[in-house]
Length: 311
Ligand code: FAQ
Image (cartoon, rainbow, N blue to C red; front, side):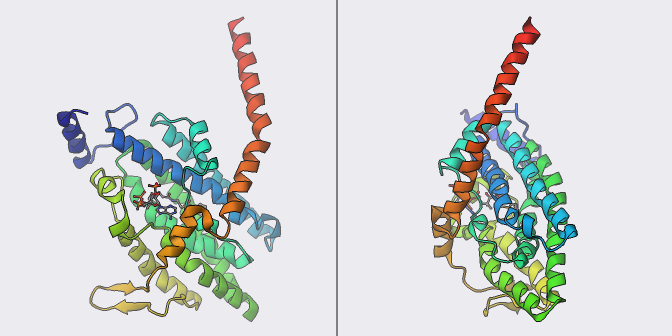
């Protein structure tokens, strides 16, 4: 790639111009976007599983309708994001193969189990809360199709976050057993949610380039801090305790200081050794195999239609 062309590309980025599918882009920019957008898509699709687990056990018709809608939204986000990745010249089949072969990552958070109904509240409140914190800046990402996809996705995520918080609110206002269930869910989801933002800045190998290209507008640690600052008052309002004895407000910085994250746990989950990695992958592989006849039928139909149109 010619130095002058690369410099011109960076000038466009610096001028906040959007990069569109047919524009010149460096190979490494394309590669990192395919990586990030497809990981994001896989996360949405695998992310349907933990909550899908509770659809048949939702405590009321109203809760069930909201949960069904949320899980369907996640599917929509996944398909939307696969379409955005396809604009970069990769096929959906390749992307799905990468997920099913274990080559592509998906968010660590979806490898934890949903043990009680309160987990559905905690996921909406915390997991969607963390997702929004990360995704709002992506609405200004330099790559047009990804940035535009994020606008709608963020609107839906904010509904998800509210429905989750409202579940938590109902539980803490309920019986003692319900309040304990809510606290237990917070205890289990808190630390994995902080890991969603990725490794500490010093270990984040893609951050330098992604920041220069304005794919990332804030660093992993900056977004993690914003999430902690936003969530502490919400936990207080619920009357729940964040499971971190080192959590305290720092008068000097104006931020909440938090305790050490167990990065070894994060590494293990990403390496495939989290509590539900094997289950999640088995569920996705089975869904893919069970859907083979639909793909074959669609291809056969398309082939027949082509023959008919030509005749
Ligand atoms: N899990 O150099 P960095 C949702 C990997 S929200 C697994 O810092 P980068 C909504 C990373 O890929 C969740 N892997 O990387 C929902 C890289 O590995 P690689 C999805 C992780 O890209 C809610 C390596 O570590 N959201 O689905 C994680 O600059 C409720 C080094 O890391 C997105 O994907 C992790 N937590 O920054 C659905 C948002 N963190 O690829 C259902 C878009 C890092 O070299 C229910 N993505 N890694 O093999 C991003 O913003 C970025 O990709 C980051 C990571 C911030 C996640």
